[in-house]
Image (cartoon, rainbow, N blue to C red; front, side, top):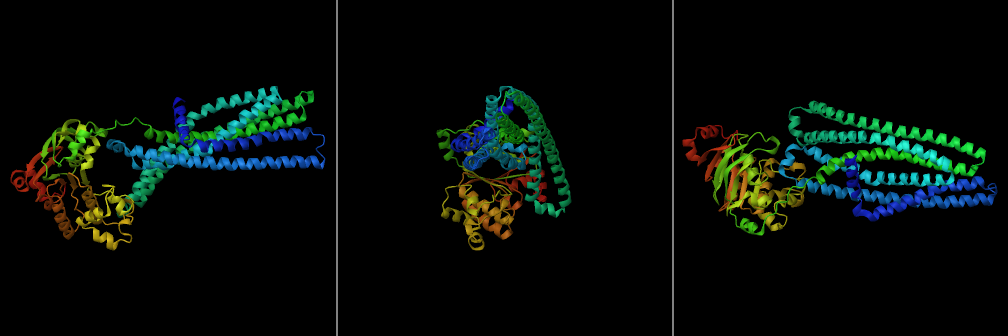
Length: 583
């Protein structure tokens, strides 16, 4: 219950920035509730009015009711508009906070998280929260107000009958507490299973061409159906608990009201209560009873939103990673960095599998301005070396020294400002070409964009073959472009960064021979006096570098030029014979 209270507090904190809308919504609630609670008083007056049969009296009551219902309609409009707008704005704020929090998470956070589950938190979970802070919040406030004020008015009409009804309400509240924990549990389960199903669906559509190549449609249908069964099971359990909860509340309330009504009839026969007072009391009882029934339904759905909010707040309000700030002195040194660096006895294991060392006492130095190739079989540790250079992970032991005696411990993410990384499969977002290029340099001018694209042999294609030039949307993961076109854009993006160090994971592997020669010629010109680390997959790449680092099982096993290694390393010769295809 303590956790639920904290989560409710966090949920309601979403209202604070939009307090004006909340207060306007409350005005609407008060107007509507005020009319509802005044209606029994009119009935009481009408029942006890001896002139009720005259036309003037009837017209008077009709005019009064028309005025009240007009006020109620205005209140409904204000409440609906204010709380609806509040929900929209609050969830927009929350989605932004969640997205920002995810972006700031360290790389190892994503090693154990499914992207589909994270997307589900941004979409499905946030939608439930939006419903909670708009519709459900207004409903809970409205019916709670009707219960409290209605009960107070019943006390004024008849203390004895009201005391009986309060006893019924006490049992209702006590029984409600029994259901809250189970409702919350199954609500969270449903959202987690939905996240798993979303992950499967997202990955299926992302790699649809490869999966279709295997005729995997039926296999995927079965897998997705199994995932949905888990969602359904959790959902049905939640619905079952919610239904038992709502029906129990309704039954207890109706039985309690019946007992109170019978007691009221008895009090009328004894003269303790007038017929008008009994009529008003009964109507207040109905208002309170119906309010409790609706409140139970709204509360069960609010608890569902609490389950969803836990998944969101787990990230938004998680313990923040210590912010890595770089001192001005180090930034000054970093700006003078020419790209060289050294690994000193570096060992590393990924946080998700700490028992397995991926790198073991790695030592090597890349001087400023040198072009170095990194070769090795798949899983040898090449990508891990790149991850450590980028300071995405911290070594378990040892140190990475950049030029000017800068340690990885001092630099944090600042070092990435001076590095351009081109992976084998370039990440392109579903944005325009210009927006994708500006990921590397948001302040880049149009002239700089064109120059980088010219050097990457992609400018002519962008300007003459795409319908909207640099404003053309590339689709999800660059689906509108060929593999070669995506790599050229990625190379242009790297050039746009103007880094001290280039890291290229065989960045021309998807190009035809003619385009590869053109780009390599352009890149070599740009690379003059620049430091570059190239993860090589082809012999043509490594023949022109200054030296080669051969990685095997997390260790640097050989170092030298292509010619030297052919003479001295059997392991390297074997890789060359296989055209480095296992790299």
